[in-house]
Image (cartoon, rainbow, N blue to C red; front, side, top):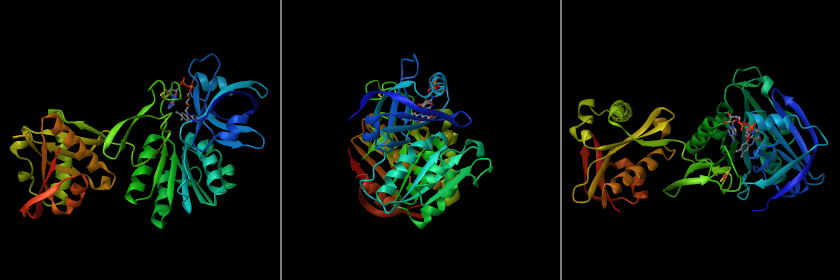
Amino acid sequence: MQYTDERCEILSNRQIADGIFDLTVKADYLAQNAGCGQFANILCGGLMLRRPISICDTDPKAGTARFVYQVKGKGTAWLSQQPAGASLQIFGPLGRGFSFIKKPAQVVLIGGGIGSPPMLKTAKTAAELGIAVHVILGFRSRQAVILEQDFKQVAQTVTVCTDDGSYGIHGFVTQALQPLLQQGVGCVMACGPTPMLKNVAGMCADTKTPCFVSLEERMGCGVGACMCCVCKIRVRGFSGYQQVCKSGPVFDGRSVVWYQTKPLESGQFDDAKAVRLAVFCDEQGYDPAAEFDELDAHAIHLAVYDGAKPIATGRVLPPEDGVCKIGRIAVLKPYRGRSVGRYLVEDLIEAARQQGANTIRVDAQVQAMPFYQKLGFESYGEEHLDGHIPHMYMERKL
Ligand SMILES: Cc1cc2nc3c(=O)[nH]c(=O)nc-3n(C[C@H](O)[C@H](O)[C@H](O)COP(=O)(O)OP(=O)(O)OC[C@H]3O[C@@H](n4cnc5c(N)ncnc54)[C@H](O)[C@@H]3O)c2cc1C
Ligand code: FES
């Protein structure tokens, strides 16, 4: 990674909306080397930790870089008071940004609030590559709208949404995204608040549209040395923590662990029950009296949560001769196709492994067989009915 610490003269630093400032600095290295979606660490007054701010735009000919930032605390308040002619110590460009290596014919770029600035350089980069750019911006209200005219200069369409309906579409960015996904777009890229990113990534997963999101975490060093900016990522079945500053801030939306899997304490069984009732009883017609059996009392139950809401569950029975059975795996309908079930089964397998299992068995509904085959399960025995639904026994050696 190529970065440098530059002393940069401030060319302008003006307020463009309530508490939001537009800063342009002379920064030759950044201007020549920054990619879209990257950020820089700005030294703010006497504060030890530099503040990460996304690179909104660059002009390589003029040797300038532009940042748009919101005053949040001490650092950004200090920054907002710096006049033209003063200088800033700026370290960058940092992180992995958005990539157009797989050049899609069209891209949808989404910016939520103060997540909009990095999408401007991204829009310009895409337009320069001949990619049709559709921009969706979301803000609280008309007063908070920023950069609309800048985006209009490069994008084919710019749709502004406001939470209170005071400007543009009354609603969230996801409302404007839905019709574009239905028409089919090559790729979606987004930066903004985490709930927005989670919903965008979920909608893209539902329509099998590639999606890349720029995450925001509190940062220390900005270069991968302090571990204070980690987020949970899953790649090919392995989950772990990655540094947002070094491996991100841009990640594939499918690899971010948006939903948290937790073992259920005894008092939380109602959470599992609610999901199983919705999926097995309301949707599939199983009798609630048969759905909950005495094995529940001996099993380890896991549940997946979207915030505080349980969205999926499954259980692991105690091992017998090294064999653990997993089952009662249920995912609420709106969350299917978003890797929730796959991650849950992987976590159930891990829970079984920790109990000493060397073999995992599942009695799979036949329509779920391809899903389990992808996870390494093989079928054995005869197809049989469990209630009114055909099932097949499947097994995976650990
Ligand atoms: C990769 C990246 C890119 C960013 N790009 C921009 C940008 O283009 N424009 C912009 O306005 N802001 C951006 N931010 C957020 C910005 O870094 C913080 O708002 C800033 O560091 C706050 O510093 P402060 O000294 O003003 O506030 P502090 O006194 O440090 O904190 C004030 C408040 O802001 C919250 N806060 C601080 N840092 C973060 C953070 N990283 N994420 C979420 N909340 C935070 C704190 O929890 C606290 O509530 C970005 C953050 C990251 C990680
Ligand atoms: S901020 Fe130090 S590792 Fe990311």
